[in-house]
Image (cartoon, rainbow, N blue to C red; front, side):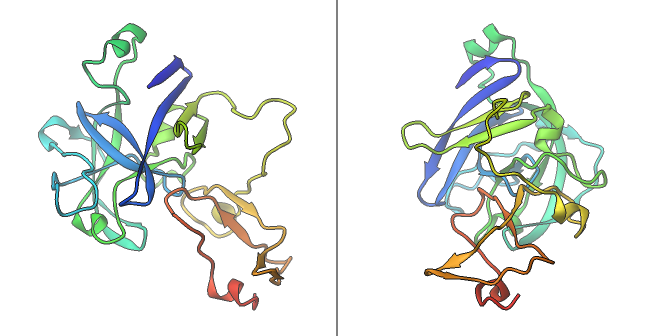
Length: 242
């Protein structure tokens, strides 16, 4: 783990073949957890179980007696086509081991964060534990990880030599740099999605060399979601009937 200063942190990512996904490691109440880096959800989460054989990956062990009340009631949430109950608790969070000397040298204290505890309904099948990186949400839903920590930008660097997650309280796009894709908030503003997905408008869509028809009156929106291992499109869009 490399920390530049209090405004920026770089955390190694681990590719897990059984999940076909990149996992980030962190600590809640001193317990080490792993979660899929997910730009398609907003929450910090952990499993309600310690099972080492029921799932493809040992996410970590939840100890409710080492957490405290978050002030939020339980909810039903949907992740990756799974739906299930989520218990909202609070505990100290850090990317460091409590006994890490570097943590002590840099004076990086734990911060108490609200997180969701996933039961079997959200862990079974295609489910898992997710490290959500959507920051902006409607006020009525539970707090996002980035909203609680104050980070305003991130970089998911998947280069094979050293995949990592960079979190920063400053912009990671350099001034004068125009090499980026502008994002829109249409799903939240026009279609009332409770979170602000990282979304862009498609200029063209070509499948097997053939361009599909895109309706200018209802733009085709692309969601950037690291919680998926491929690309999913609607049947109407794929058949060019929109």
